[in-house]
Structures are given as C-alpha cells and as structure tokens.
Image 1: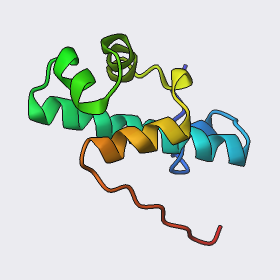
Image 2: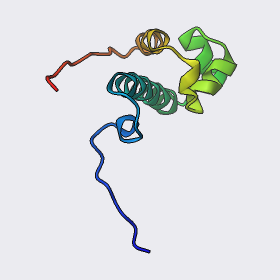
Image 3: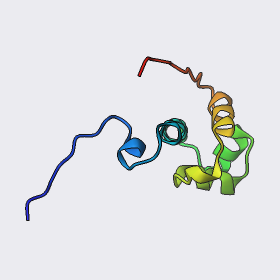
Length: 95
C-alpha cells in the first residue's frame, strides 16, 4: 500500500477537519503556547521559576510545557505572553 501525502493548508487544525473558526482559535492558542515554551527553555527556567515569573502555579506551568492547550483560554495565554516580556501582535488578512 502506497502512502498518500497531503500538503497542509497551513493550519493543522483545519486540516484535521475543525471548522474555520475553531481551527483559527486552536492555532492561535497553540502558537502562543509554543512561544511561551520557547521563553521558558531559552531562559533556562525551572517550572518553579517560570511559575514565579508568569504569576501562575507550577502545575499550570507543567500544563503549559506539556501542551495541554485545552486548559488555557486565549485570554490567559495572551496575558502570560505579555508577562513573559513578549509583545503579541494580531495580523488580519483576507481569506
């Protein structure tokens, strides 16, 4: 049996069949979480240090670094990104 490779449309969540709205929200959350994980890694923070810097509990940092996106609202992720010293920007483009 030959493998079939389908090129991504740029949003894995849309590729998986989520509605456009849900795929967009999921991608935003995933991108924000990835940025936060990069900050934690780049700064060499332990989970306790990250918790202190971000103003959340260590178990929440654990959820973050493990990619448990369903435990974080978009609002909370934006707040954490700002607390980390990053400046999120939203770019809107025509479909």
